[in-house]
Length: 106
View 1 (cartoon, rainbow, N blue to C red):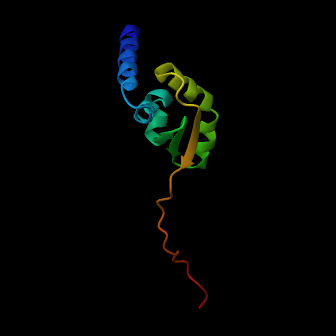
View 2: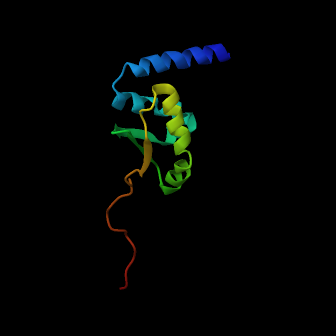
């Protein structure tokens, strides 16, 4: 099974290297971070060596921050020294902005 996985990784690497860096980096995010993290996050932009990834909340942001060097190393193995930093941005809240319906004094 390992030769197949290695072959698939090589195919993906070759495919990604044909894309512009901005596109390749965001497309490669699931490969670099893994499926569990990819299911809860989204690479939203890449410019000047900085990747911005949207995360669901501050707890995710804080936890993923400890893996930045691993992610940068993953990108280096796939695309070369393209990504220099990763920033995690908390998703804008989807909670309604209408005032709460708390009962007031009568």
